[in-house]
Image (tube, rainbow, N blue to C red; front, side, top):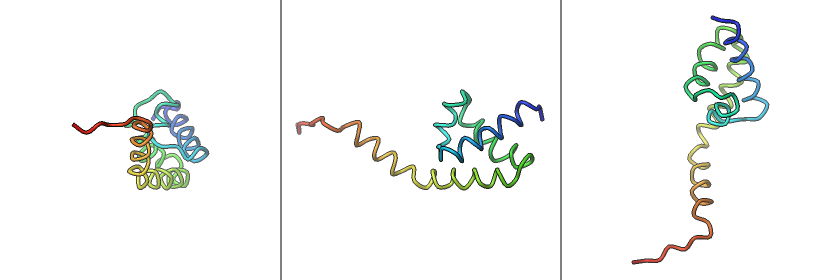
Length: 87
């Protein structure tokens, strides 16, 4: 594995842990795809630093379990203040 990929995987994990960030937020921050974030944390980082990978994975699992709540809140905000008239 190339050194810059290893460094990115560690940086990504540190960012996720420090900010309790979602995959989407992390991907946007690093300018890579969500798939790359998953690959870095679940595969590459596991080979480089298993304990860091496990810590980042815990946060991603919590985020995944809460995503339906965030989605509902986002929808609520989207339609907040708009009144829909019944036809």
